[in-house]
Amino acid sequence: MAKKSSSKNYSGKSYTATGKKSDVKGGKNNQKPQKERKPISLTDTSGVDGYFRPEVAVSRWKLGYEVFMGNFTKIIGLNFIILLFLAPLLILLFLRSSTIYANASMSPFSANMGIGYLPHAAVLGLEESITYYANYNFFMWMPIAALFLGVGLSGGMYVMRNLCWGESVTIVKTFFNGIKKNILPILASVAIYSLILAVSSIFISHLNLTSAINGSRWYWTLLKVLMYILIAFASLHFMAMMSMVVTYTGNYFQLMKNCFTITLILLPVNAFFAVFALIPFAILFLGSQALSLAAILIMFLGGSYTMLVWTVYSQWLYDKFFRGRVKTYEATKEEIDKHNTREKEKAVAGESEGYREVGKSASIMDGVKPVTDYDVTVKDLDSLFTRDDIDALQKSKTDL
Image 1 (cartoon, rainbow, N blue to C red):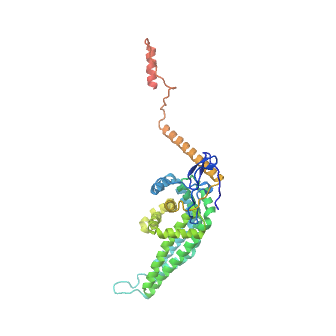
Image 2 (image 1 turned 90 degrees about the vertical axis):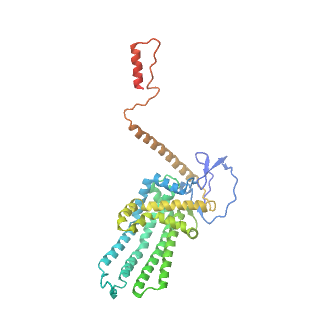
Image 3 (image 1 turned 90 degrees about the horizontal axis):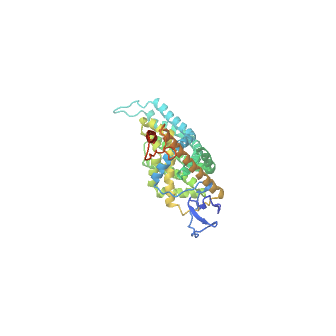
């Protein structure tokens, strides 16, 4: 249940749950109470832990660029942390690929091949059999590795949300705070999605093997198409849940319902931004020549870039469809003070950075003496002057 507080910050203004400021006079809000709109069973988390969600005055594309460039080192650091939690899944993928490659290199795919020859009976379905057993072993262990990744996502999405809100965060501290706050709903989402993905993928591999041995059937092809559609929709729904649970609180099944509605109604837009967010990983499928580029991108930016693109997009989505229709969280005095303290520290850090930049610029001009009214003056000549007066005038001009 939302907490209520009538506290003020140091500037005499109070923060609402969306980060806006409203004038306060005599400890009471001047604005007339507005009629509450019908909520959709969600509560905005803006204000929780002192992180406020602001109004965005620029386009989402420009916001994404500014967040990326303004927090470049933090984004790289966050990606290294995510890679630690992604490692078990990457190891499983490597073992799957190695198994397929090793079995394929030892299999007699070239036996009795050529014009007029049919494949040997023992070779029918061999390729599909190798893929099936490799996929079976991979997807049986994948949900466990995915849960480990879910721990990283619960912290990473929380950090990225705060960066997109324009907050100054400490990556490691905020990351572990995000794990404590969001781990349960995100792990539940990861478990559901990984099971759907595992069962669907094993089923598709089994249909491919059966079709290779017994011949294809139209209804098997239809089943495979339906499985691919299910995987695509579940993937979009899962990405929506990752952003929804760090932005709103409420009943978990209500969160799932809202994400289902968003995914279905805005399917083309969601699909576009999902593909755009997954570009570093999509490069892996461009062939062996692109593997080096994909590896570099994934190592330094892959996970953070995906979270950044999707978070910026989803926050735009919430501003467009949810703002004003959900319950607002009223921050406590401690949360407002925490926000104000962080803003002061951010301003001081910006001024210090400016001083350092000035120092760097000044160091380029070593030996150049600044001119002030106290250090250098120009000698005046009287109506009667001597040679010494002329020399003093010349010296003052040289100094200037």
